[in-house]
Length: 204
Image (cartoon, rainbow, N blue to C red):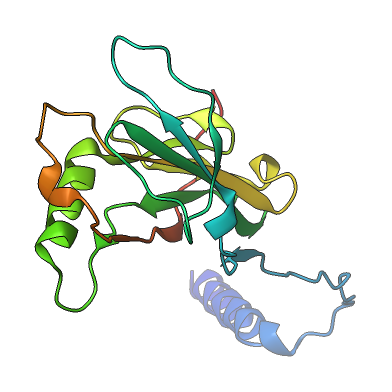
């Protein structure tokens, strides 16, 4: 009985010694470096918008009459009257580079203003044009809905580095004498553009 006990104790001590010394045991090992992969980030950029002063068109649009064909409008010398609709197409420089990049191009057209101390005619014309409406009609060749002034873009949708934005300014026809106070008024127009990344829209 004593021999068996001694043997069990010796076996236990031997196992403990083997486990305790496992960290110092020699064994084969090897390592190798994997290939280096270069990871680069993309780009989102909205370039400087060129002047479109000479790119405006004007068209007389009055309900119940045949609309005239749109003709060139020179903002430096031509003057508008009730019933006129001014349109321009602005080429917005857009850079979108990235595998999963999507961005919203938003256009703020609520930018009619009068400078300095406005005359009564300036204020009246401002009110008339605000009443007629300044709207975005197309973005990137696609008509947008009423009240919509933005569009989602991806690198694939910006084919030549620009996105065309069509804007319309309406001087409404109104009623007899309604806009008499707006004669010889002077109003400035300027649109603002913002490009903002958004989460990628899942493919349908």
